Length: 161
Image (cartoon, rainbow, N blue to C red):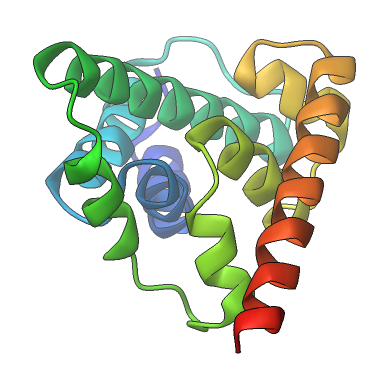
């Protein structure tokens, strides 16, 4: 287990970023808080020390992403109606409510996750793959598809606006 000071410092340092990851996938609200909180609780219960700060952060992001995916699966089981998920996703308050932010919000959770980790957290495809439990090749494929979708969305909004 981590020493109390270590736990407190690590939790304080990353809680907001973990919530941001969960909110991108789940929308702002209790579910995003639950996913971030699960990561912090698992940090508290962790028995092995981390190799580095980067390792700690990557582990926390992976736990948060997995918790978010579990919540999404639970939502899907209880309701095949995705309009509620779309509405919750639209409520996420991005720092800039730009066309790009709106376009990113319109992507599927899997594409949003790779875009967020690659551009926001400046992670490599290999690091993202470890967090999401997929190969680096799958990450680059998702990034490529997400970029193409974003380009299409943004070009469409330019034509309409």
